[in-house]
Length: 199
Length: 300
Image (cartoon, rainbow over all chains, first blue to last red; front, side):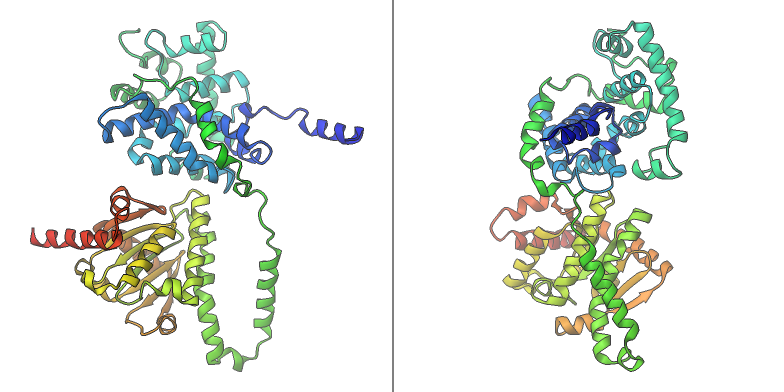
């Protein structure tokens, strides 16, 4: 590889946002370059919500909710969607994955998580990185804390802030989410790509 | 643990989360969904299992196959049509040619409807009493239309819209089907990408003698009598272009579907249908059961 080509390639990569910062729509556009890396990021963002949906599904259809059975359903959902990840309108990525959740699980299981699921779409449009990461993590956890800790305490620990800072970042992020929903999308765009759940 | 809860509603409200969001979290907590958390290696295991699928090069559809060839063909076709004489355009040959092409073209043209209206590309009433199931695989005209149907459903699926819906009106008795018919029906089930419902003949009411396709926003194709051959069937289909009528029929077929048995959901066999199709003579058994359900219903 000659020097010019090296510089050209380097320039192409320079300054590009990391996968974890990309909105869902742009995530799909990076798929051709690095299928596994992109799909890993996609799974990272959504596996927890799918896990909760799978628990709901098994609770209604199975005798018990064994961890391994729940996780098998999560994996199967991502496996089912894998072949179509790179196809179709990038703006409809979450909507298409919602259909995969419905196929492997069912409508009721999807409805359990829908309030958090579709809000992730505009969340990744929040400009402030810290706010975006806090709010995404909150929605991915379906706004739940742990046995001994509230959500802000967990986020503070995870992102190394004080609990007060975490609360204030979260409040600011939630406020900015409404702004993003109201101003960053063309009329009807968000409505179409979230089955009408948003705005 | 804060008062035995994982969802601290007061705090969430203070952070500005809406009642809807908080209520959804509380409902999940009540359902016990936070009792378990995913294993730390779940994403790794997911990616390991998906690796084979993700490495399939044909998965990446960003490299869309070159469109110029079909576009050139279409341009050539329209240029030729413009130059044809009025006499030729009124001829039987032209009528037959355009009829064959129209069904396919109308089907493909539903892509725009799918994107703009976000509704199924087409809904269909496939009547086994009027159209032989074997024609879909043995006749070139029906095969071409079936292929166009698959493309229309793929467009819908890729866009996150429900695929085509098909309500199949069965024949009155299981003995009305030959083994070749049943093989053809099994093949249709295994290759369809849409939603399929089976409706027993006795339950079909006014649809007992009707075959119907509602394409996109306004086109309806109707066949009202049994044809002796595939060519005769394609000839006998009558087209109506009327938005109101198409909308009404879409709603009606949706209602009719709910009275039948759901066999395929977005190209996947429903659990009940899949279980029965695994057995030898599966289609016959499945059909017999669907017909039986109806008889039980009448008896009750």
